[in-house]
Length: 238
Length: 238
DNA sequence: CGCTGAATTGAGTCACATCAAGAAGCGTGG
DNA sequence: CCACGCTTCTTGATGTGACTCAATTCAGCG
Image 1 (cartoon, helix red, strand yellow):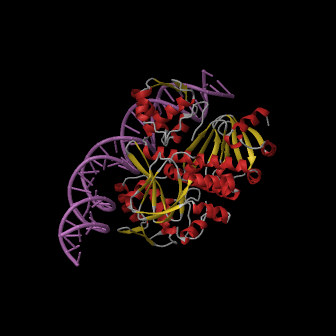
Image 2 (cartoon, chains in turn cyan, red, blue, purple):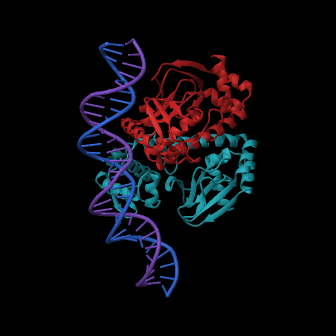
Image 3 (cartoon, chains in turn cyan, orange, yellow, blue):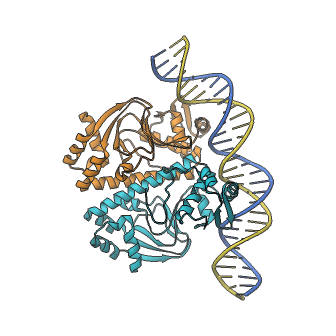
């Protein structure tokens, strides 16, 4: 594994406070791997053998049922994923696939669980992380249940612009079909919804979104700190 | 606090493995209180000062945005709730109100966090619990995104019958308006959806649901262990 | 009982999905 | 470097599940 990858992982809230002994031990047991775009990493129902950490690229966690499929989460580096399944030692509830060429570090779940038992600081960090993940899912459910598709889209656009440094213009970081599914709509609906927001503060140029009127867009989204987690490039929250 | 209440709490996965010293310490710092029906316990955005434990009665966790309101979770005894907010020491993302007369134990979040720092077994239990809560929320999001209202209702009815001991007939444990909101629909839609399921294995008598054909109903719900958590009266899972 | 909130029923509307066709990217290989 | 072909994206026409509004009916409770 590359040293710079380790450094990125070390920065994660999960590992920031952990002894370097614990950390190096886990890294020694881990694998780093590069995957091509649109590759399935694992499927829902598989045994949770590894904690995954996305170092570079992008990953979608999605779920399927009865022939339907929905994107549950879109991940950007550096992020760990499916921690809960590893802790519980239960099958994944979601499938994962790369959005683009991605490098991913895999920490064996057995080693992770052993390290947690040994290192109280790690246990505390995992606990804190899981509490945050739970709250993220609550936010997402609220988003789904309380907002319409159009409102969810507006909120996502604002969050995205914010995340990239409050820019007035940005490229969509994922394919529209995936974004649509993530937002709980069809690609066709997303296309129309984007079109419909032109009169509410955005302009479009292919995969580029230009925010022409923050206030109008914010009025559609009705930003709420108890739903939307605005992270700037630097800060954190939850 | 009544001794039998303590016994119930002691049975929770959260406290089952914890030293009696830790447990008694927490109980000594806690309050037990009886609330009338339909009373707001706290609102979203409030500071998370207490871990709540429902001993008797029923509680709905719900959320509001922009004038809309949605039930996120329906709770039955004995259950703890809003653990994540206490761990994170952040505002509640959901509001809570009693469904009926309920007795609730409140553990001060400061004391809880202190106990976790002191007692590794408690930390481990909290970690495990949060991982489970996270997975429950994932199931719920999958349910929302992948199933139609009708399918969600069918699945809920099956789960409910199962929970009460695989009975063929049971009373709805909550008001229909709350159930509707929990399932992501309006009361009118629930009423019609229940009617519509009459041809698929159920019969109705006011608040009583009679399952006349498990197979037909199961076919509508398309049970999936990665969405539906079937708990019988005794066992557990996640 | 009679009052009040809950549940049902009906009619009309709307948001979003579906189906289908065309346009635009984009990676591949000649 | 261009042409081909696949995929994604867009746009249009139509369908439908679910919401809204309104009017009863029903049930619980003082």
